[in-house]
Amino acid sequence: MKNYQLRRLRRSRRKRGIRKRLFGTNERPRLTVFRSSRHIYAQVINDLDGKTIVSASTVEKDNKAAHGGNCDAAVQVGQTIAERAKSAGVETVIFDRNGFRYHGRIKAIADAAREGGLRF
Image 1 (cartoon, rainbow, N blue to C red):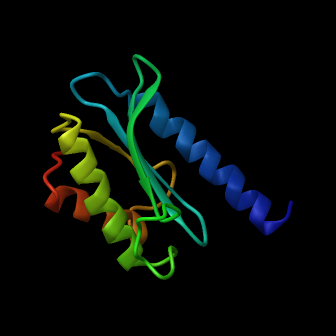
Image 2: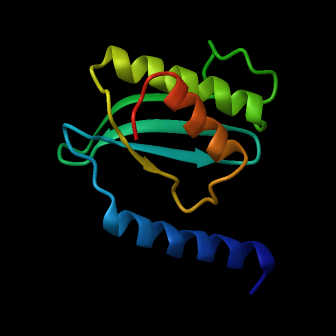
């Protein structure tokens, strides 16, 4: 098995294990993040209804990040998601790191969301 295939397989296994325990409700929706090599995405999801409440990413036109694959862009997305979630009435969330290690861009987006007023 090639190295990149093995990496994807391991992440999908970690993701399944995490998702067995995490479930977003009306009171505490799930804040999930996905990172690619060029961009980072965040969504606040209510799993009971199967709906995305708010989302933010580096792909959006109003995002001012020159490059979406660095920690500065992740901080900007974290602030945006916190601002949009608070305006939608969401105060507390469950953080879903989506199988990624909690460091670098994932940690930056979580810290920025906490500074923006989300509790998790």
